[in-house]
Amino acid sequence: MRPTVALRMFRQTPRMMRPVPKEDQAGHTISQRLRKLKQIPPELYPLAAVVGFALCAATYSISRKFMVDKNLRLSRQGAAARADDHKAEAGDH
Image 1 (cartoon, helix red, strand yellow):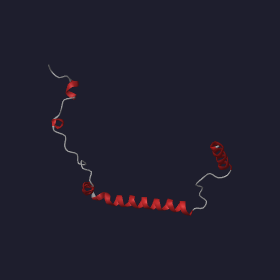
Image 2 (spheres, one colour):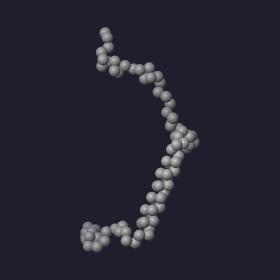
Image 3 (tube, helix red, strand yellow):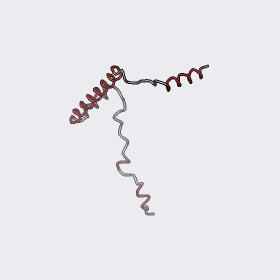
Image 4 (cartoon, helix red, strand yellow):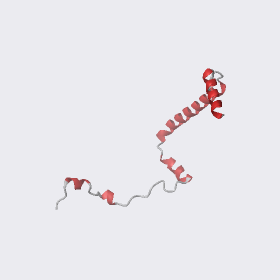
């Protein structure tokens, strides 16, 4: 009996018949992860530096904004806050 087109699509290739290679991340130790850093192409180092600097600058900027800005509202104020406080007190009793 000759194989049909549908059966030929599911035929095993020589690559599929080979055993599965061992996983690179099998141990997950720190030294193995540090060795993996050597595989990063050097062309990506400037990109990593720029992204790292941008993240540091953004963290500094937002933390300074939260600490210094006195006009920044971190909680509700006015009638809406009083109404919420009143509802919370009524719910506690």
